Length: 108
Image (cartoon, rainbow, N blue to C red; front, top):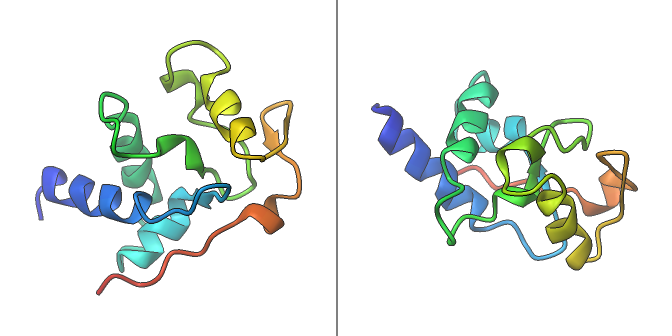
């Protein structure tokens, strides 16, 4: 499978994340049946920032940290986008992460 095809599959899962919810790179990888490819999911999310149709701000690390925030324009854009959806963030950490976490369904 090419990176481009994998990235499109990642974006298809990311588009399903409900408003006010977040998921992790690993959860997306697991949903795609490629549980060991969380880093590739991160690369896909980093490559998605020129696309308005991918809510990359809703994808965080497994501990609820905003590890991808430096790939957004402006230092706090990722946090601002999450906060606009009712998700509280303190020092790059989602508060009550388990309450906001969305487990993507298996895709295949």
